[in-house]
Length: 485
Image (tube, rainbow, N blue to C red; front, side):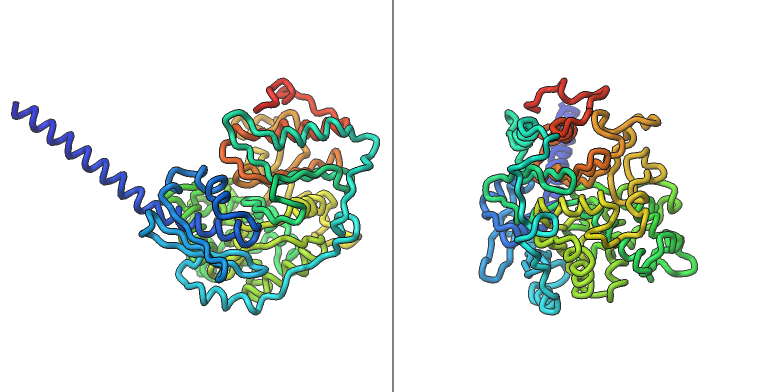
């Protein structure tokens, strides 16, 4: 009997400790949730122009059960959003500033963040009457004879169809063939000028900006990263080069995990300086030896780029406007900074589907726009060359369709029914800009897809290529699968 009571007491104690640990885990995880909610909702309401309720129900809450514990309030007059856990704890606020978008007030306040903004020059207005890509005049009525309209419409129908029991939530699709838009479609409430979040597609744009600075002589590809924190005699991080950063082989001990107590989320939703957070990580591997995808790496690189422009928010904004937005005709793009004033290169670039397509077309054209070379000759070839140890799937801040990431057999492709030469930007929630140089095609898909099974990018891209008469069959022909996927 005594032994039975002892066992019950032990089990009771274990249960209490388990419940306590669970509650503690939830409590300390909630600041990530309030930070995410405040930042995402602020950008959705004030930058995109979506409603608060639909953003919470369609975009935020499906991401995690923790978001059901978070409440939010939108102050439209002051253009701020505040989120709290259980209405009481872990308050986080974000503020919207014209041309800068939204920023979380981490280790600072709203007033200080507002004071960053007045020195920032207005963005690029653009030419709306000229034909795309220089302007925004688009005519898809007269397609080239090689384009099969019915098949292309079928690809768009697939993109916007909702699978049974799923949430594909495609918001925008643009298809470019031979330098012109041949198809586009938008969800209700979204249009050609609506800026949408690319998440990690921003990384590729950082790779492009780095190339521009190399072309101008502001950086050298194989120079050590000019970060004062690392430039001490006994710091092994001082040997990390710009090339190592671009190829995601810095060797820094940064965990690309999204969840409570993880580097990526602590950086994005708990740090004033995201570059500072990542730069303080110790060296885990010899630089250049191990491929490790890292948002922290990109944010460090963006800090370096900003220092080369003059070091402050306004100077970086001017550089991006003058070197990227204006030459490419990007009228909707907004690169949101963190609280330290550095654009969040890993994650926070908003742009319309047409503007994302302009970036893809710029890369397809080898960094030349209107006859003007903005990137070093061969820079796109460099970006699309497989990085060491990446199994052929990654270049310099861009994804490649070169090898199977699990088997890594020579000659294999990630998507076997698509060309091996394809390279692409990709981001959370199934964002994609695919460049298919063999077919002179750029495809943009933007949305908020929470489950991987609700979107099949391989099938969609294969359907698009089929509409151009391209032969895309292979060992994993997507047309053998159900289009309802």
